[in-house]
Image (cartoon, rainbow, N blue to C red; front, side, top):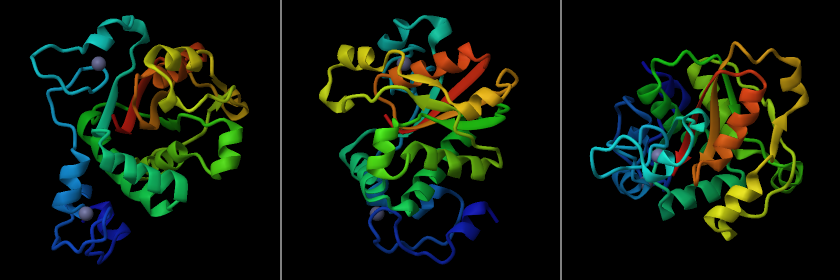
Length: 239
Ligand SMILES: [Zn+2]
Ligand SMILES: [Zn+2]
């Protein structure tokens, strides 16, 4: 019996639309999502970019954006689903109404992506992309931290908040690509808890809800590398 059979007992309805599903096999988190919602969420299938997980048509290994990033700055990412309107709706329900069941569900789906694509990586610490304090006060929680908590629980690994956001960022959706990259530069630091730790031996899984240009992940990784971390991988729900 897998962990989700005890977490979600006798729940015959779809996680994302409450429609009842005839699903008694607990083989995957996706078995708790109805066929319509699964199709709208559009799980990402290979072939994908070896670094950022962008779906690719041809047989190249890297997408055009990753080719422009210096090799030492690249951070491998896996994403569970495409950033469709359904994924936006699911994330909005989680982020803005604080429905904690969604953290459990989205975390379960992300955990499956981690197990599938990073099964050989010896992670020792799970952490998340931080929100600025103003945003936490406004929202009441950091959605990525909640997802990291669930993924850590499912993996049986410790989760710790070790990064902090030094400056508030304007809503990223309103910015073009270059403005977004500039607005995120030097936005992150290691928080007090992180400064107490010797981060050098850790292999870190960095969790965020959405992957857009990859700048957020790379900026966080830059700070972690400056603190001595050698190996960083990212997981995001949607991209
Ligand atoms: Zn559904
Ligand atoms: Zn790429």
